[in-house]
Amino acid sequence: MTTRRDFLILACGATAAAGAPGLAAAQLAPNIAAQRKAALEEAIRKSTGGAEVKKGKVTLEVPPLIDNGNSVPITVKVDSPMTREDHVKAIHLFTEKNPQPYIMNAQLGPRSGRAALTTRARIADSGRVIAIAQMSDGSFWSETTSVVVTLSACLEDGLI
Amino acid sequence: MARVVVNVPASAKRGEVIEIRTLAGHVMESGFRRTERGELMPRDIITRFSCSYNGVEVFSADLYPAMAANPLITFTTVATESGTLEFKWTGDNGYAVTQSAPITVV
Amino acid sequence: MLSAGEIPLAERRSGYEFMSRETRAMQDDEATGPALFSLFDGEALWNRKAGQAGVACASCHGSMKGVAVRYPKVESGRAVNLEQQINVCRTARQNAPPWAYESRELLALTAYVARESRGMPIGIEWNGATAPFLAAGREAFNRRQGQLNLSCAQCHDDNWGRRLAGSVIPQAHPTGYPIYRLEWEALGSLQRRLRNCLTGIRAETPPYGASELVDLELFLMWRANGMRLETPAVRP
Image (tube, rainbow over the protein chains, first blue to last red):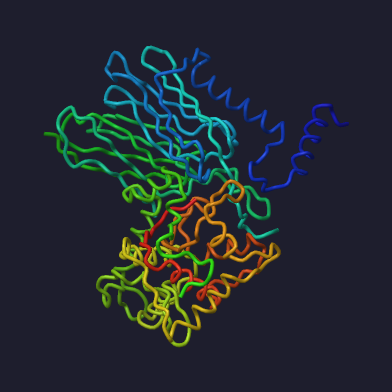
């Protein structure tokens, strides 16, 4: 017997299959988008232990219009003296629409000198990139940037 | 063949904050891609990176499938003393690479 | 010698100029560029003795500066690109099996050789020998093909700079091949890119190494004359 929950998942799955692949701004079926949003919130909750995350101190540099989502340069800087008494312990990087939300968790300390790091991420779809800095005093600070990712204009894989 | 590149200044002044750029040659297969037949390609990524300075860990990072292929990690550290910086990458399927770079601190 | 619609030298722009600042930085910073490992591989292959003859590229060749900007060449009655020339050397001089198109080795060695011409202007001559192949390449460039019935010229001569579904249409100059294409997350040849374009317009794709593709490569390089080589370029 199909439960109501199964029926909803089947119905949403059918909608996803009916959506044309290769639409320039890939639209996720509603339940997948909701699942990823929930996964992101859970990931942030795990990283912060549920503590309040304040806006500020963190500078997140991501190109707002991304040439190709396969390799997106990201630079995170945190305003911190990086002394033994007052430093950034960790930087957590997340993205909203990927199949899983974690990009990287970096562990820093007073020996870092500056709280700054650069990397390149895969961003699947237009949405938010979030950087959260965990400070030595237990506080959390963050910055969020919205980015636009477009698919390649000409789909190049062979037709199945 | 596992390949990595590290860019460390050969020398620095004591107390100077130096920038270290590292690049690892790795496909970083996310585990979410499918073949043309619809088969899921298994995850194969670097999961951890660390940098030690004369034996003391000064930077580390956990990496996830959302890292791009050929992962670039650029970070900073204080040039405290002359010696060796050791870099370590580990990941799925027994991937393990280390690389050292000397540094002279004046 | 330009046809109507073709881009005069002063207006030629590399695909580099259509990319974001960050992607350009990836190409400029060779120390952390994603093509770096291929260049290391290429250098190793250049110096490694190979084949039954047991000679390395380095055994015969000195500097390859200025070579890549003059390829494809016309030899023995057909246009030959750099990848094919490398395989000719492998089979004829090293007595080694040729490398498959798009293989890691062929891409790495091609990138290594081409990189030696980075910064130099592309220079393909339209002369008696090259004319028939350039004409064939030009004809292919201007011919409507595929289910979408589009010619290369319609996008890349007539509509460069405009957007196709969010991506900017470049002028399609092969100024940096083999390129590290972010879409591929890997190095790839001009022929790979051309075959992708043809798939994009739903046209038949000739096999790698087909003379139609090399003729088109030759024409595209001629069309980019004067532009600086950027190998290995990074492109979206």
